[in-house]
Length: 529
Image 1 (cartoon, helix red, strand yellow):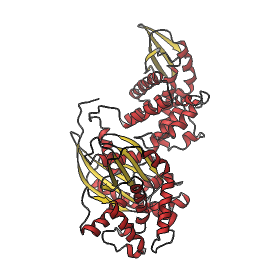
Image 2 (cartoon, rainbow, N blue to C red):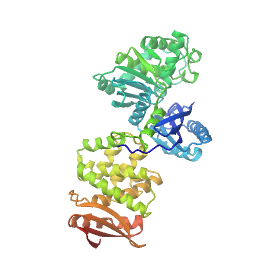
Image 3 (cartoon, rainbow, N blue to C red):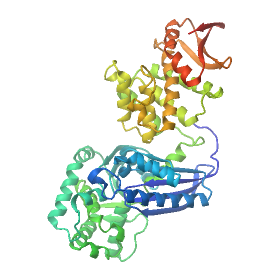
Image 4 (cartoon, rainbow, N blue to C red):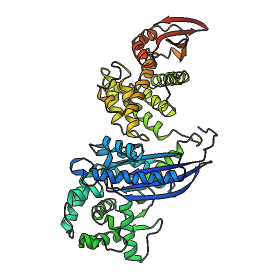
């Protein structure tokens, strides 16, 4: 809904930590839903170098990434950046030593990084690319070839129809097929790589074939560099904005690249020498998809994930006039409905949980912000979806479904917090011995502890699924007691009985004894729980 508020002017840095490169977009965000790009930077770090053999980031690769991130942060701060938003993709997403790397970035570069899922990466790429083109209601095929993954999207100007992320990247395939090989590439070897791409993408290919494709768009360094070589080869000029890469031209570029050794490839006009070793693997990916969908040409876009981060950031602003649900709200609602959740009950619990969050904040029982409030709302909406599988142990099923649902618009930490909050809404209290809590960092553990308590109480207040309790809020009577005021139309003994299970959790979290105050038709009574 429209809010009528204005965006405060601020400078925001968006950092994309990819498998091959790290990118910075520094923006001045102005009132009225507009922005000015201050600078864009990119550095090749090869974070995913040799990672795909054993799923471990190499120490030297992590150090290179830290040095570049530190430099980008210093640059952003020199412009007075108010906020840093950083995400990491395939290399970090799949790394067994992910936590070590994130801790290193936090400690050495002062940067908090969110790891995003493959489908979330695809969504952000779609936002970034589609926001820079005039597509209208025509259907576009979007492909972004990264170092560790390739993202595929079908959509028009305003919404996507299909998102996918494939474990097909220029570095990943180079590691798989070209270990210690620096000579020319035979046609047989190139065909083997293409067959591997088809095998890995078979599900995606089958899903997309029935869909309409009017235009095709390619983004990422690999696609841009192939187009740059083609422009030099056929038109004797540099790549320009919105140029096309013709399929016939791509095939000739591939033939040239494969005929040369690595050292010879580095000298081709237009090539980025740092990509010479991985460009054939990347070319095999775009070649295969253009061939499979009979695409005669593909438009080159210089936009991508970091631009999507900006568009996503603006669309979430308090002042942006939204006429539909956000990606986050859509994603949560879709998951709930797929699992046939009790939508009325879930909304009741969510409303009560948010009232408890707000009233406890006023009493300084916690100091969380709107970000945590939003996560509580989503956890409340999804807390019972595990019943779709089985009511017995349904909190554990809810946790599993939330963690594995590829919720869009969320980073992995947010998804983990939502899932853990749903898990601890019944039975065991949050303890580090449970992997659902132990896998989170200390701050996230604190968030889950408080949010799950509020959700526990809210769930008990609609235990009968009849909406007897209309409103709930915490009142502080003295230093040792906290009063829970409940507004209800009639007696709610079942709900009161359920509150007794939370005395211990309230005492542990807030250091106070819990008492209920019932308001029925202006008649107040106190209940010692």
